[in-house]
Length: 127
Length: 127
Image (cartoon, rainbow over all chains, first blue to last red; front, side, top):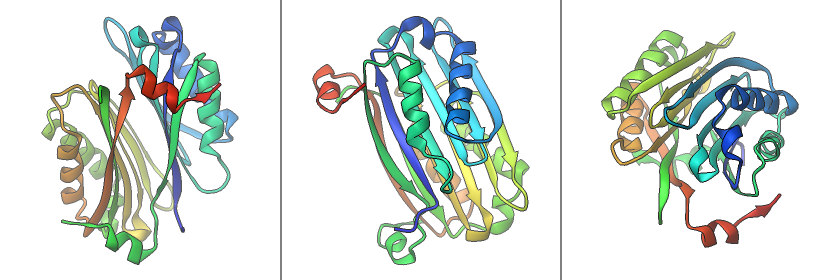
């Protein structure tokens, strides 16, 4: 299957409240996970919610990493999208799980930008 | 299934080169799609690649919208993640498909943050 990219959607459960609620620390971990995976960071945008929770994205040359945290539930929704062959999205995902102290994770990978015309058309929603 | 959010992953094919390569226009359409769906915009981060292509993210109170474009292929990878019940991610996705002039789209929705303990544990990757 000829795809342009790989998109890992991961649920991190059992993380610590404090780390998930610290916008600076979340941003630092997200940027480091991108760098650890060999990605090139282009833009960052993070936001702290009141009374708790952080949302943020790191735009990389190879696509993006995003996170949304629910500190009160010990939960973080993470997705890591990479195009090209140089960066493995699982490297960043696993790094995030470790740094956020996740007790368990569910995750799956979706291929993005499948360029086989027949495949795309067979599943197409006509617009 | 008790989920915190809905994440639509969409592939837009057959879009116009010019719109996909115009970072200002892409940002404008992304922000408008969030507003059209009733979301509250918090942060934006967009990047133009050379010789072509745009990546960008809109962080909303309800989570995020992200896009990566390959103008030379007429393709855009879009994902729209919303939590809560007030914003429907398909409203934003369909708006994006229309505004980028997509000839066809493949898309699927994934539930995020399923908080049924047994479900999560049964699928867990032990860390």
